[in-house]
Image 1: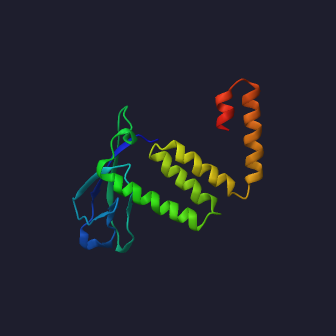
Image 2: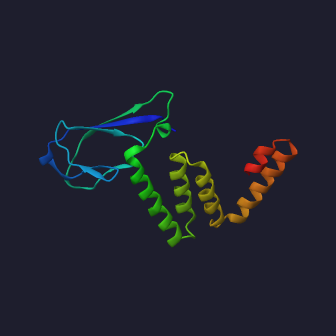
Length: 159
């Protein structure tokens, strides 16, 4: 966890110097020009769309938070975005069940949302659908046996 809480983008180019390059935060796009500043929670998915012409210079500040993690704050208006994203991930996982990386990314999504139970399910799906599943089974079984033998039962159960 990077503990970033706020991103601030400051556009350093005239809008006529480039074409494209809109900043997307969640499901909203922002078209920014010279000197414009856009601040947003770093935990929201964000990207810059392709630039078709010219060069776009931007200063990006990533501010770090204190002891409270952003994932502990209420999501309020963002809940709809996250539910929609989860539905899209689930649809992709159902359509392409054999792509283990897709399940892994979905697990990371749940981890970022602090939903560890669903993250573990997706990570297990990733291992189950991996070409190396036999090696994973062996490694997890050996790890669990070692933890059990050393009295670390909760760790053995986790394996």
